[in-house]
Length: 367
Image (cartoon, rainbow, N blue to C red; front, side):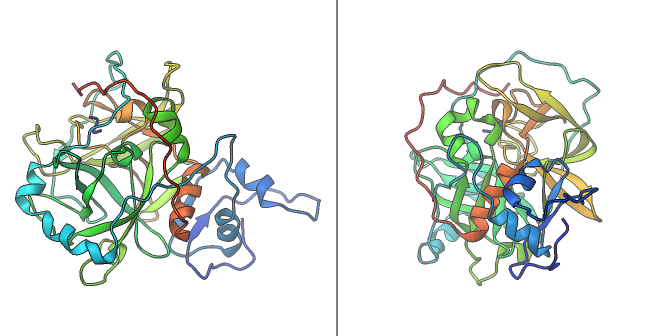
């Protein structure tokens, strides 16, 4: 698989940062309703640790948009009482033997040449904020996908690709290992509490729903009671960021058919807008050319420089669950829908159960 605004009170008591651009003029009307204003935001919104209260309150209270219900979540996690076996389960041998997550619904596409020379990728020991989800499927086969810690009020959220965790098969021992490399767990193991996926992605499937191929995962604490962000730090979550970025860092964990496995790959390139011409896979996506991003890199972050660090603008997935060939990768475009999903996770909303999966074509092997 491919990989298988300004506010009146400047701070929210829960610490969610939702910055937006200032409008050039104010409406003469004394009545201002967030439902009319916020969905029209076209400039980037960033989620940080400290935030303007008015914006934070308005965005956390946003109604769910569109004609389809959503976004809601699917619970797929462990309680604190059951997390100890999951921590112990993932030995170096089992992590090395894990295979990329399998995704259904990817249809084959003709190979397209990159519009410019493809920058190389190189293996490295990773960064603390990016790691690997591990679990076992119904056949007790170890699986994995990439994920990224983002800043949040409770310091416990990771973003990945929805197609990694969408399947109906039971996911046992589901855990997150930050900066996994070479069989090591440098920051420990964090069991999963809940997985939040947009209902439209469940309903439409990985092809028709490719625009919503992202998931927000809420983690349980490490064995010593520490939250993941307190250990690793986190990146800002940036939505409505635009498609064209000159310098984007792409990180992902390749499958075990790559000679460098299990080290992550790192590459810097540019992103562009790719509009699908396939009726079965509609939407606009981020496209990036980086060599060597094979199965397993799904969920890996698209990172842009921001305020002396990085911000997350996408994850490997979306169009053909992230791409059919190792030199071109894709991401769903992160919008206010993504921010609403983040809101559900921050608030700890009760997850909705996914409806029965649609029949989909089997996944084509990545070439």
